[in-house]
Image (cartoon, rainbow, N blue to C red; front, top):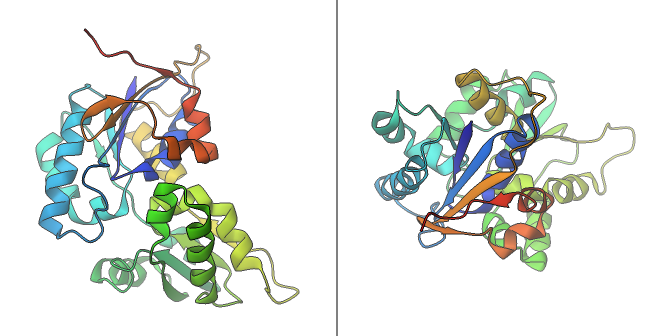
Length: 267
């Protein structure tokens, strides 16, 4: 079994690690676009063009499913990706976990890129799945870029700025960009700092686990076998076979995946 994941950058690490934990026998293909990122400022048509190129590079390795581990690509390019690749290759998009976050009631914050915050797409998700919760949209300028570069000072500054815009009595925070899941504990600590006494800890809601499980359900491969772990992984950087970017190893998920055996390109 082979599962491919695509993103503009290293935001796919969280979902890839989730797949590896659920199915350690799965071979992984990680396809990203360092030459073309960031995708957020691009037009929808431009995002679609880049997403299709990254998806085609992954599809050439004949995976059983493709996870679009990127909120921007899921918003703008998912219909085009599915039109080209399905039904031969199931394509699974990523949606912010607004519904499970709102189901617990109370105040909810959605951390997302400035382009997504306030967008018709996100407002539609809040309307359709917010369950009437009190939702605050929090823009996080620079955070995805800082995570991509593993720039510790920039991450701390962006997280602190977003935490200052987050209501102190918030019950849950939705991580509306896959990059943010790589610094989830830093976000939790920043939001929890100065929180009024007596309130329960903030609950973070990412998408990695859910999208990994959905991909495995689509191909009927949910249950973990007793077989020996596969531990094989192909990394594609703008279509070129490579190793994991150095910045990926700054994160727990990247180090976990970095223990995999790289697939040697055919001569």
